[in-house]
Every structure is written in C-alpha cells, then in structure tokens.
Length: 87
Image 1: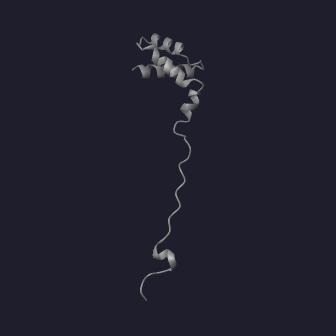
Image 2 (image 1 turned 180 degrees about the vertical axis):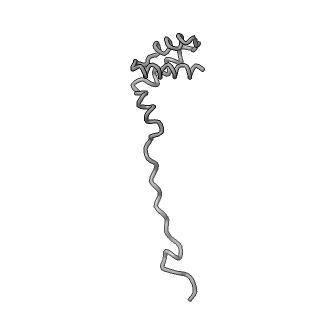
Image 3 (image 1 turned 90 degrees about the vertical axis):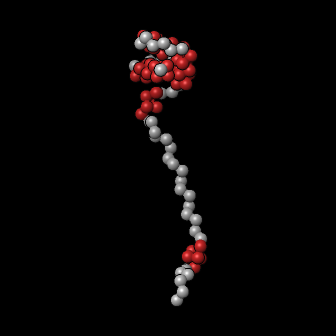
C-alpha cells in the first residue's frame, strides 16, 4: 500500500506542476490518513529526480525499434545450381 500511496502522491504533485519531493509526498500521504514509512517517499522522490513524469506517462511503451532481422542463410542443392530432379 505504501508504494501505491506514494506513487499517487507523486502523480498529484506532477499534475499540479509542483516539485516532487519527499516532504510533499509525505504531506499528501498524511493528509490522506495513510501510514507510510518516510523512506518510501524519499526513495520515490530520488528515483523521479530530474525526470518529467508527464512525459514518462505519455511515452509508455514507445521504446526503440526492434532489432533488424538476420539475413536469410542460403545453401543446399537448389542454391548451388539448379534442379536436382532426374530428366
């Protein structure tokens, strides 16, 4: 429950355009009457430091493209020179 409460608090702060800090996260969580160890707010604030949460939310799943396909490997009798069937 602590991770969910602190995450929602961080989302509220981001939505309001406020700085995400451990103190502000703890203030929101306390106002909601949820008991959370202060370390969770500190860890989340440090993890989100310097990151744009709104940008993260709008770009979910938009990672880089996949790896290029490997070239087909040729070989065998057909590739060497024609049909192997008897006349």
